[in-house]
Image (cartoon, rainbow, N blue to C red):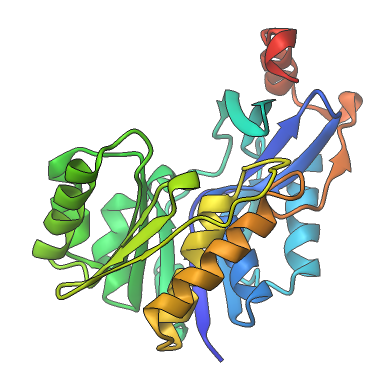
Length: 288
């Protein structure tokens, strides 16, 4: 069985127009998707001792994600306020809460039991990337972060480097992939939403079109694609098959609200003051 750990960001995505919140965050999402694809996954991170933290813990337990290294700290669980236009999510406000944590030696040693570890650029864990890569293969989501010096610093450690191609033309995307491969990344995944995705290696590039559906909510589609690609590479599946299945899985994610589901009603009485302040600043027309 493929074993993948994820370490880093988590969040509750608050859909105020629906009165619901969902567990999410790049690393948390990938841990759940890996399990759904048939792998064994673990999540290393931090949540608060609040309603949002309860939601995350309950969701991970129901998805059979190993939470041995998930700590609960004093303070607020990270949150993001989400609006939508034509099913595309809009990030309106956020607070990182206690999600930015310092890994311990025990956390790093725990990662040795997995074939790969996934980290996202939003996790604040760049100083530990080298240490993580000494324990296991590294998957890293650059998302929309595009500084060349950052790519060179992190890319040399990557088994799989994932990049969001939103807003970049073909030449820019090709240059980004070439730079990551040149500095040491074995595989580079470029996701382009409705324009499909490309998986690059040193010798060849593989392309797939997007599976076009009428989306309900696009949140989590990119994380789905990353998880299925990493899972397939570790299983040594054919790249064309990996991309096809990843596109199908990402399209399926767009068919429901929230990145992984598990919605609960937002209890205003239990919302933190920070969330309430953010909610009051949102324009109603953005939360449609």
